[in-house]
Image 1 (spheres, one colour):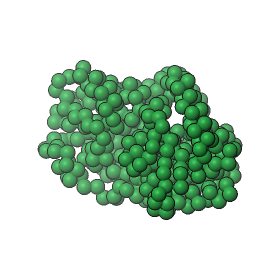
Image 2 (cartoon, one colour):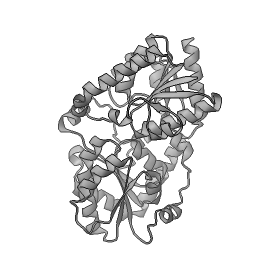
Image 3 (cartoon, helix red, strand yellow):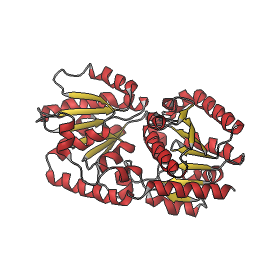
Image 4 (cartoon, one colour):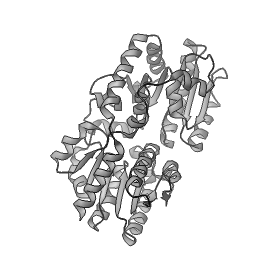
Length: 379
């Protein structure tokens, strides 16, 4: 079996790795090619373009990158039409993948969208276009099923692979020992994002927040896990201008280890907030965009919340400090409130256990079921 894939960022790369593992349970000789990150490539996937070229967020940022993105998509269409795969799977990145999927589906190639487009949060008018583009959707959130079924789009629940991979009980002492943290307290995780644009918007904000928090907690240690050398280099450029007494350690990878060890985390909204929740790390969620992008998002948004833990649980569990509310003073104050309130920490962790139960299912079997249905639908 030959499968085309396109993953657009680090979280998609992780999901793509789960896809490859699941497919090879039934098709050991399956090959994967398209756009893949390091985790997928480590499992043998062939990447025709660097995944980082797709890791763009925000209207202005996408406009600047649009010529390159359109060129990549045209080249992928030509490649897959000239040598059709048995199946194409777009992993998240719906703005890029749906148009690609539509062209391939019309050419008779079965298409799956892994991670449903967030029509529950905004742009619900995309449902007809999604139905036209895909043979089915692999859904990671249980509340999505009625939305897509109501629109006539085949959907398969696969749960979130992270809920399968991460144990319910987290050994914080072992995590701290593994990171050689000694007696430092508190441990604060800083996760400013995986995209270059997110580092550009968040690095200074996160460093300034750490500086204010250090004034309240002189023995605090800050850990910053970043996805690759480029994002690490950008963050370290900002860090060089920080006060010399800040105890900030920048790591490449190791986000799960850091969140397992931390007392609290400041997390840019996205998949990392789900990782923090599953690792039972109390947190504050933040995010900044360009002013124009933020205005456009607010006009079209329909979800009550911004962060995934709050959306999944449908209640205000984690503080959200977004755009204008995301100031170093406000973020430091909310983080300090959590650190000073053990009861609030326990309540948040209890909610995270509930979230873990909601998302835990056999992702491998769900993926195989969705693939079988897509292949049958196309035959």
